[in-house]
Image (cartoon, rainbow, N blue to C red; front, side, top):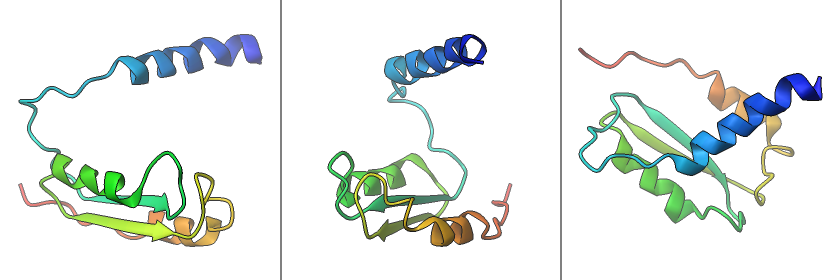
Length: 91
């Protein structure tokens, strides 16, 4: 299984490491709901709020109690947020 999955995972990380958004790229036309932990040492709530500049849709930031692994104790709440209906943006 490892031999099957590892090349794909390596390629994903290679793409993530090398990706740079073009400065002239238009904002996304989607609503964004970002989640972060209030004690995450890697991503502060202020840094996460920066995602708002990448969309012309609505932006919502939810800060949950916890560090980088806030998802573990907040699984039910995160699942509820992920299941919220999404309204299409006007064309």
